[in-house]
Image (cartoon, rainbow over all chains, first blue to last red):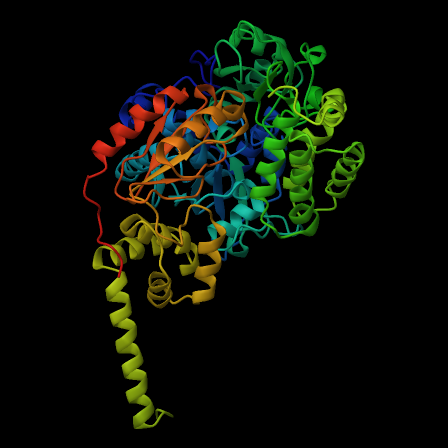
Amino acid sequence: MNTKQAPTHPLTQHINLDEPLDLSCYKEAGGYDGFKAAISQPSDTVLSILKDSNLRGRGGAGFPTGLKWSFVPPRDDSGSDRYLVVNGDEMEPGAFKDRWLLEGAPHQLIEGLLIAAHTISATVGYIFLRNEYSLAADRIQKSLDECYEAGLLGKNILGSSLCFDIHIHTSAGRYICGEETALINSLEGKRANPRSKPPFPQVAGLWGKPTIVNNVETFFNLPNIILYGAEWYQSLGRHKDAGTKIYGVSGRVNKPGLWELPMGTPIREIIEVHAGGMCDGYKLRGYQPGGGSTDFLLPEHLDTPMDYNEIGAIGSRMGTGTIIVLDDKNCPVDMVLNLVSFFAQESCGWCTPCREGLPSATYILQQIENGKGKLEDLDYLLDIVEMVAPGNTFCALAPGAAEPLQSGLKFFRDDFEQHIKDQCCPYH
Amino acid sequence: MNPMGNSSQAIQASIIQTDKRQIHACLTEGIRNEINHLLDHYPQASGASIDALKIVQNHYGWVSDDAINALAIHMQLPVSDLESVATFYNLIFRKPVGKILLHPCNGISCMLMGYRDFFGAIQQSLNISDGETTQNNHFTLISLPCLGACDKAPVMLKTGSGQEDKLFTNLQPSMVDHIIAELEQKKNKPRQGGDIK
């Protein structure tokens, strides 16, 4: 166990957006100690620490990271490749947390990848970045170059048997690339259509080889978990889930932004204290707790702790943890229309419910917003919600689109009906 | 023994000759070197498809049919595979675009913070609609979904071949004229490649 003072902000302690720490400064600040601690232990031990820590994937689904990694088959003697992939294709509407981490502390990402490489015996890592994050790509490449020069990447890292390379892959657009199996297809140079599961990527992913895909923030958690242990990590949370989380707020609040806070911080505290509450003259109508594909919640839910189970229990998802605030001067129908048309545009077109259902929903919402809606349209929208429900589609894109649609219809039904009754949008 | 007769060999040789000319016309040595470097990152050449298309685009501003054919020969991939990828990803342009690409964010946070007013103003200022290019080829306007800068909404990203990316933040309609004037001044920075024939 490390005797140094454990950090209170393990994800952002090294962040510097103006000029991220270079290798020597990062090392001086304790960087790569987590990797050194990991590589001095057998990979099984590292995996156990990770499982005990109860770290859950920070991309949105919240799947336990240790459990995910344990599905990778034991290493054989074939010497065939095993892949690690960083999902840095941040395109969830209202999500901007990964950009902060990628631009602010690229070495912490690389350290997380190295720990993972040791744990699952990976040979190659890809950092999948969205095209627009060019500053992040430049900064990460600079850090990778430093690591190669210092023997932290390449053959026999730090004199061990670990050989690991990292490449950056910048995408060319499309939200669907954030879906794990679509991302793998995209890395193989194909259209980003999701794959059916099983087989799961842990067994047969990139080029048919065992592959782990995790979100940027998930990798950022690893160094300190290994350094300070599972118990310390668990103790950081304020509720049942472990660790800290990057939370964010956007919309008409006084101080939109991002903060690293204990997992389970109540929504009210995030919006009212950290984001400074609503701007003068605006009232809180509702909010999406974790990005555009999460169900709306209302002011009455403000005292709920932001963790996976608690937000799940009140009918939404924590998703990315970046809250989008709807004020009383923006039209809820218009907001749902913006979200659903985004998902319709970003559908890869592979399966029918998504390809056909989302454009239909967009058209109907447009009609309602433009004052041409009919009351029966609302039933038809609910039919579409049912049609794209989980299990009817290859991936979570269309079910994600249905979340703001169904909860919007539930919580802002009066607004939808008024649009139809008055044959115009009362907000415009 | 070669099963092909002499005349087949001659035809084959002339095809290879044409291929080489096609490659050299579109893919300069610099472009080929950049692509070859990236091929090392993947166990199969197809993995570098998107990168290769982007490298071509970075030099020429867009990806022409000739460029796709040349890439297919150079990377030994079917043309249809490259075309399928090029038409799937929305930041690969299969038609010429302006020198400067303006991408106002139409994601939800930007919409809530006034994207529409800004977008109306910039359309009016440039006298084009979404997806169009100004007559002088200086600007192309393409809205993109969530650019991941929601705390500074509304935002707009400026890109373009041989251009530095720049993110404009906390936008107001009144800022449009100043932004356009500033970009007009800077746009004459030389491009990396020439115009594609």
